Length: 342
Image (cartoon, rainbow, N blue to C red; front, side, top):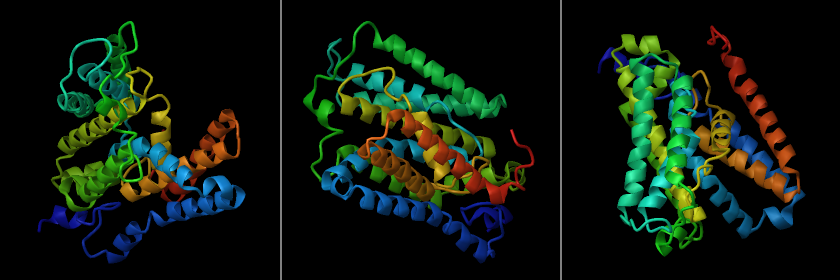
């Protein structure tokens, strides 16, 4: 095993030697804090609203609400673990949604490519993520700026595709598949769970997962240890684009229409969930399990606020407060790593 493999084989946190067992055990417990917070919120809501919160219908509502954020959070987790940011979520979702609807049986044209429609939509989202990663790495443009541009490019493409009337799905399968629940929970949530399992496997058992942590921990050290930094950055942004496109396909199937603002608000919720779960914005610490806890925490809090009749305006304020507290809590012990605050 090479020196670089020894340094990054733990798959979590900073570059450390293979013998640092204590650091590895500590890294694997990083998700316990968000999990405890989730359990506390569930207990509080169970006490405050037992007749509405502790019901099968509400459980299904929570899982359905969590399906798209879970998928988006998987892509965002890898990007943020590298110390980058992806703001293109809503634009890619919009483009993929319109492509999927317009290539399926719909109300505005005679095209119906069947399974080809979602596949082309997913390919389009992946290509948008790929281009974001290439521009970021080849031209050394900050990921913030590149992905912001991709966001608005995606919205522009979606607006052009939208045309003069709302395209509606006409096929019974494409229109109802995401919301159908033959297994007791929606198919959208089943897809999200499968995708989470795949993301967890990639994170823990592949070079892409290990290198993502290494790049986020210290990109210069990763490069010195023969990690192909630029290549894996492009891979990760392509994965994030795929996640956004998948969310767009599922969202449009659930609504039965293709709309430009399908992903409105998803960027905020996704980044909030990843950060609340304990993944550092500076990179190198956190991961898939953290993001799962973060997503469920955000969704359960929003669900509880709705059940208690809290105004949507105050719901946003509470979400913002939770994010600020979470960022301070997760970054406080790591502030010595942040040589520059920007």
